[in-house]
Amino acid sequence: MYSLAKCCNPIPGDSVFGFVSTGKGLIIHRTNCPNATQIMANYGHRVVKTKWAKNKEISFLTGLRLVGIDDVGIMSKITNIISDQLRINISAISIESGDGLFNGTMKVFVHDKDELEELVDKLKAVPGIQKVDRFDAEDTK
Image (cartoon, rainbow, N blue to C red; front, top):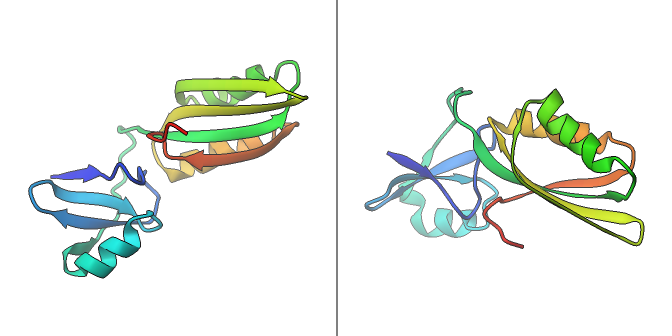
């Protein structure tokens, strides 16, 4: 029995560790989780090495923030890469523009970190996109 930590939302390919919780089984955290230092310092005896098994049947929700130059067709270029080229499912997408720039967030379902990195690389290669950063899809910020 295991679950994925809500504080860091790990996906396959992320460097992870397991925390043996009382009553909840194993909770998987990213090694760079905001809570990792505290967990390892206070509960080191309940931390176990963990690695991902290859399983392409499960998708994980993760978020991306995008910033770039607002241009006609930018949304089409973004969704074409996600849906048509990479066949990744989109859970939510929001793009706002002002002063010639756009800010966007999207939530997508990826199978692992490699697929996420390929998506980020392809989005960064789109002319006008200046920044693409991952965020935890559970964040409302």
